[in-house]
Length: 171
Image (cartoon, rainbow, N blue to C red; front, side, top):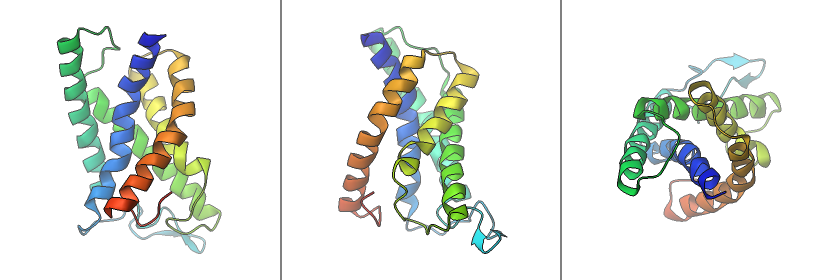
C-alpha cells in the first residue's frame, strides 16, 4: 500500500505543481490559447488559459521530474520510471484537462473564476493521469487515490493562493 501511495504522489505532484504554476504569472502580459475566438456568444476558453501558462506549467512539470528523479536515487525508492521530459508531458496533459474544464464552463455560460465544483477540482488531474497512462502503465489505485485526494488538496492550495494574493477566488 505504501508503494501505491508513493506512486500516486509521484504522478500527482507534477500535475498539482503544473496546475498551480500559471497562477504565478498573474502580473505578466499573456496570450490566450483561444486567441480571443468565440463559439457562439462565449469565448472558447477565456483569458485564463494562456500560451505562457501552458509553457510554464510544462517547465514546472519538467523541474518536478528532475526533483523526483533525485529523490528516487537519494531515497532508493522503487518508483515508476519516467524521464523529466515525461513529467513535462504529464504537465501538458494537466493543462489540456484544465482547458477542457474551461471549455465546458464556457459552454455552460459560466464566467472565468466562477465556481464549478468538482469540475474545477479534477479536470486537470484527469488530463494529467490520461497523459501519464500513455507513457507509463500504473495501478488504477493511483487514479482512485488521486480522485480522493485532489479535491482536498485543490481546496487547501486555492485558499493558500487566495491568501497570498495569486488567486482572485478561494475556490
